[in-house]
Length: 291
Ligand code: AMP
Ligand code: MN
Ligand code: MN
Ligand code: MN
Image (cartoon, rainbow, N blue to C red; front, side, top):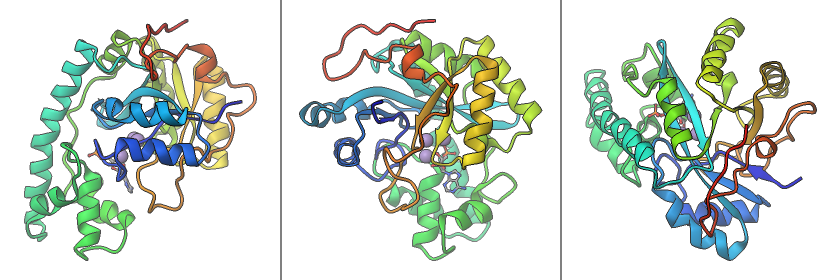
């Protein structure tokens, strides 16, 4: 089976490698099919195509859409999308507009909590146009306010902490709709990371399926062996296809590497077998999403 890594970030969102450097690293780690899935933005795809074509890495256009479900933020991956689809692009542009306001609001709140020039500080860590909590985290570590990214999130950026701003992202239905309108497959990212009870997770996945969502990211760098098994069982019971993605952001994080992931558990149907994710590789052709 090919080495699929269907979740990764570049400098277009909160990754530290440019889109083409990301492709080169994926190639050097043995990845054969890579999806670039920046948060709420698809602009990295065209910048990564050249490197992918030269190295023979099959590159899928992707996106990781921020969704508000109840009081929670959930991430929905769009895989094999047409990065020029108007409906998708308009939806993502709205999210980025909210993100801009929210980025400044996080800064104002951190300022009140005693972090001087937080917004300007976070901007210094931004390499694209998009500002995320990751950039605030890097600034908090870089300025010595905290020692690790984990501490930055735990002390300042998670819900209930001074820099947290409750999300007003897309709805689940909007995210799945935009992805489908762009010809892609919708996959719930890192499902074990939401801290949901089993009941709550099943209810969210039920809604996701009603909207026509296809997949669950069973294998993720942020899942331990137990979580992979549990999420694999959810996928099988609910008839969702299984995806595999590192959620790579930064070569400096030695716990997360491109392409270095366990296989999809036995009994799960890989998303690439259920759905043809072929379309938008080096030579754009029409995509087809099967049932
Ligand atoms: P945002 O979309 O601005 O809320 O930022 C979310 C990003 O923050 C995620 O995609 C992760 O890259 C990062 N993140 C979230 N939680 C943590 C955590 N506990 N430690 C490190 N990074 C995190
Ligand atoms: Mn991220
Ligand atoms: Mn995510
Ligand atoms: Mn991600």
